[in-house]
Length: 387
Image (cartoon, rainbow, N blue to C red; front, side, top):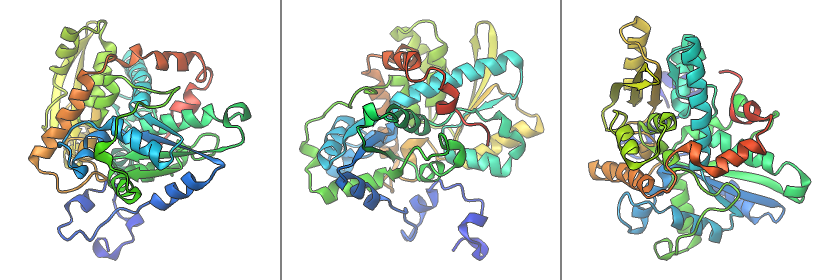
């Protein structure tokens, strides 16, 4: 039981899953949803669609004897196809959507001077932490849904008409490094037209169990590409999985150029590194912007207390509940030592380096989405109306 015999819902729990990671006896485990996924796959009248978060690709391979931290995204796509998923997508695609919407929102707030600093909203455990313990700052949270929420809303809208769905139900399975994502999909403010967009969340650990249960030889699979029409994201979307990645992706969006020298300059701005709290300043069109990047809720509390007391003044604050970001989320394989932590970070940065498109605003699939399906529906599908 939680302390003082309180029910879990009456505690300050934010569902981050770190208690499960650090429990010395392994007594705390993830509530699994694997059976729901197998049931959906076995239903011929259901189209089962998967989305895979960036951090998952660098945490699966070593469970099957592959090098720690290596991106095995192609093998994950291949194994999901063989397990029966109809379509497989990369959540880096909708991370690009998040960058587009959040950067626009940020510049609007800088222009008006209202509700600053802007707090990122990608991490549901952080969002719950702020809403529960610092409710006076709710209006500072970005109204953007997380990449998970955006993708599920878009794919459900895409298959809403009979011409596309052909009478089949669309069932979205989100594969995440995070236990809090299971909580996020149940929030009414993440629903579209009163309907839940993401049907089930399974963690990286659950995915590994499903692969092993399937009997498929993961290590020997030939990598496959994600499906269309939402087939790829930019490198900026991939680095969402590590602390500072959201901020770096936004700074890339603000950059006029996309050459290697520009990307290297952005990378060296101060967003990268394992420090629990990182502070730096950048200049955008002559405007100095103060940035804070923090990971771990103890560090989040320090940041919030500094803001509350007036000791610190920022324009944008990125916070992830888990130290080092999603690569060390509560749904990842536990007992990860220092070598594994470094390898996972490097794996995401390497995946970014070999991606042809490294800025969200240069992803042609994103641009075509704005010109098509999202017309007149941007707020409805990509934002929340409040916390």
